[in-house]
Length: 409
Image 1 (spheres, rainbow, N blue to C red):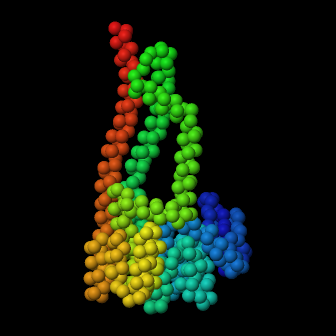
Image 2 (image 1 turned 60 degrees about the vertical axis):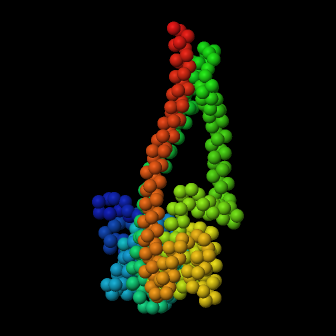
Image 3 (image 1 turned 135 degrees about the horizontal axis):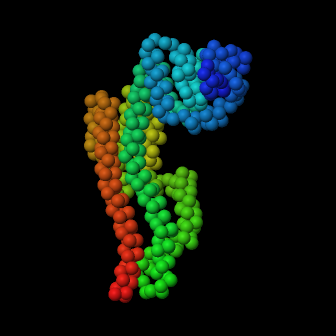
């Protein structure tokens, strides 16, 4: 069914915008009037021809604005509706009315129409790889095959919410130090480019011999005043070049991922986060009925590190040849002995999924604790660094003044 984007006025004259599905623009206007809103402008954004002719291009364009939290909320609501006994197509229609994101609403409309025409829910979701990644689609496929789609959707929403909570905690922990660094840098640049030159101009006019520390301060201030644009240009080019090297070249990407794992302090945290992602994702997939080999092929794209992904891929090949999962992972060098031992125990006892969940819980807590410790140490370190810089500026200015006073006396 075609989708129409509208601008309308409610009973109090407030402007509203949204998307509505209807057979025609006339039907769309009538539907809006039944909702007690008065359409001002209405235009078609997705027709039946668009649905069949531009699957890939359209899906790529609409999914850039759909957040993970919105997908998690939608998944939780769909699981609740299915648990209540509502059929899939009406449940998707209810979600369309509750979804505020226009792009997600259009995607749900296409999914509903395709499922209504006989397509599987899995095939419809796969049309939107940027919204529903392979991990999501494969779990839904396993749920459809086993007849436990509502249970699988609950696990999916639990997984998405736990990952979102971990990201939120990490971002909240590093937000304050980054803010302090940003504000401190602005203050220092302001001091060196505006305040210091006005003060040191007095020393130049008096033709007095200045202390070495003051000469250094004047040189730094003059350089920033004259060549600030060069510093800015070099910084921008360096960031662009680094991003290109990491994302577009294999060697640069591997070097960056190796640095993330080997860096002091941060390397240990990155490794724990990667192991937690590996364990929780693999456990969720296996518990939902996804075969081990297919699950490992999905997991290697979730850990966000090429080195660990390669080791997971090698382990998958050895598992396919009949090896246990723990043995090839132990040879990789990235998985700690306690992780290998827990996976081995889970394989021998037939309870690998609970073991993977325990590993994920443990390493997520450890990573969170490490991040909190580092940020608590980083804050006083930044304050000390900024204090030393400001102290250097103050001493550099006061020394010539003290010498002038001594000459006067």
